[in-house]
Length: 233
Ligand code: IPE
Ligand code: IPE
Ligand code: MG
Image 1 (tube, rainbow, N blue to C red):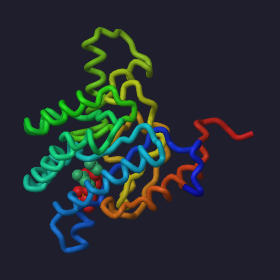
Image 2 (cartoon, protein in one colour):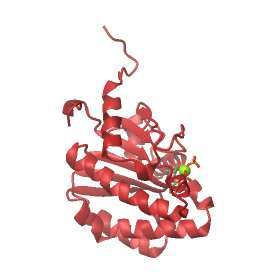
Image 3 (cartoon, rainbow, N blue to C red):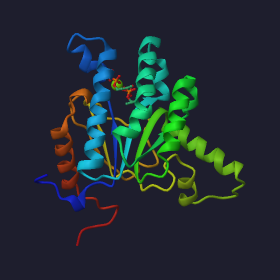
Image 4 (cartoon, rainbow, N blue to C red):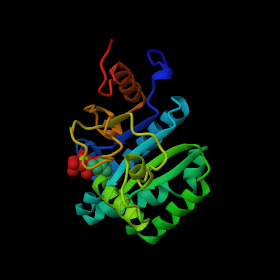
């Protein structure tokens, strides 16, 4: 871990895992195989974050509300991957990690809903947190929070109250957000939680993102001067 200062690592890292389709296409493969490879990368990189770098919170954008607009065949393939990812394998693959799904996962087939709920229940007391965004939209999350606030009878709110109603209730904001594949946008991801995050856009497509890319990303993060509106003496 040379060049990395353990004390200056992000406490909450987010990944917008983009470029699976283009990675596959550039190899003459179907897009689905890009997703398959992308999920292998997802497992490798999130484990590296939790267990090597000891980053306690990792957030992943795996499926947006807009992704329903893709061909049904591709959606079905992704649904199978989500089902498999949230099966009992999750508990074995990620000791000490709590699964927290962000997004309305009830829109997925029952087999996914069952796995997600069983996995969240089994892992609920774990201290490391994996926020998995599926059928996720940052704007919808704010609407969901506002509806919760109204239903609980709040007459006025503060930032702290809003935070209690987000999918990330009780968690610190995102420190560092990495989006792969050379696209420079957030595509509706964690709009509230990213308010002061450092952003990084490596060109590599997600399936090709390896441990070295992660390390380089963390070195980049450590080179940033996080001022939070203040000035340096
Ligand atoms: C990211 O890769 C994964 C999901 C959005 C599910 P893409 O599927 O968006 O890959 P590209 O951007 O088309 O290459
Ligand atoms: C963003 O990727 C959503 C996820 C990574 C799940 P997209 O590939 O769907 O986003 P756009 O269409 O390029 O904005
Ligand atoms: Mg994409």
